[in-house]
Amino acid sequence: MQINKRDTVKIGYLSGTWRDPRTGERINPRDLKPEAEDSFDCLPVKGTSVAYGGFIARIGEKVLPVNALEKALTGEGELFLRSNSCDEHLLEYCDGDVAVEIDVS
Image 1 (tube, helix red, strand yellow):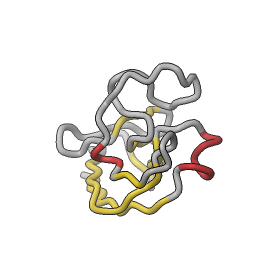
Image 2: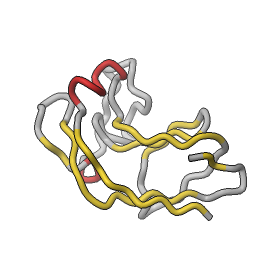
Image 3: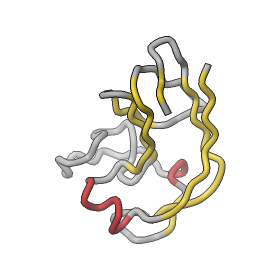
């Protein structure tokens, strides 16, 4: 999905799970508690803003935690959604399906 500079994007988690990349347990990515996770230098988002295995968005070159209830995302470029995991872990450990609602205004 292409996002323009003046667009405001809200992403709401509706349902579904994926696997926690550390434990292998099925998780609701919106229920993960933020935690300091600086030991992985390959994470798209580090620090306390989003948990390892949490739900993130990339718009163009900006990578942001997804939290549609607290703030809207802005940027310019293509919108991608994924787990906050190292790239090599995504297909092996983070399998699952989630449904989201995307509102662009």
